[in-house]
Image (cartoon, rainbow, N blue to C red; front, top):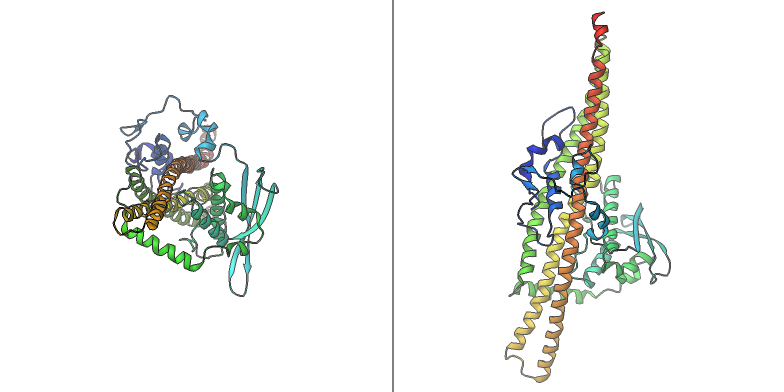
Length: 457
């Protein structure tokens, strides 16, 4: 589904350019299929299980057919022909899967490096503003390190095992970031932590979690974090989960099997997109470095050629301007598109984990039913205990199924909104980039045209 419309590559090459066109005055272009993916995402009407869906009727035989109700926001931008309708803009909050009226806003900023005798770590300031009555104040300011975010997410998973919780950035250094505490790495992680808290605060159930309230309000989490289950208790849970995983589920409902297939396919698609985007960023960085050395060569050449000094300096100026625009385009790819794709690549693993947890609950229920059906239990008291445990597990299965189905639809809406915004904004940025570079070179060409009167003289 995510690659629907790649056959339209040539039809939209004027917008995003070819994937790799070699050295040029405007630079190698990011992949055109990213915009096409945005179109296919926006055309999906049934988000929950969209893998394998047929191509939208708006994509027919290699051409785009505009919907009658489509809103063209600007006649100067082809990308805007695929913008949201006015009615959809009014429902953006619901499309992101959040609560209709938000009353909790969280900001992560001001990262600071702390050095101790044992370790070096980064501390982030977390600001929370709320109008909820269960908070003692309307504003809170605390400082948290990465391990505190890990603790929060772990507690949310314990309390809501079948809800899809937005992932945290990886603990280890991501590929391409050499220095662990470089400014780029710290800023990339800060934005990812900001997204995690924003998604959690927007969630209709997770935003009411007592653990989130503690995270946002308590100055020191050390004593609270020590109140977790003991090591032996965690070990027992791990052994029991491993035994259930080996046993497996006998009769998984068909809809959850389809969800598993979707998660596998979604992971494959997002992994491919993430790798392509990283390669594009790498090539754009190399191109920008070469471009920064290219312009000065024309300036040096102009000093040696008196008759050609003016046009040569003009070319050098054009290359400098195009280099600045390339830098802006690269910044958008690095700060908007690549983080969004990478976060949803991590979300694919979250989907698989949540589905495994649901299967564990069902497998435990099936094991209790097998014990009841066998003749191994002879005592009446033991039999009653098993019946009560089986009834409790049955309720857990029903609750887990209901929670996962509801949250799956909510997550699908938010996923499509985020990816569509990132992809369409990237396409719009690409068009703006090429229009500006084209204007630079057209201005230069006009300046080099000799008026007819002067040519005769």
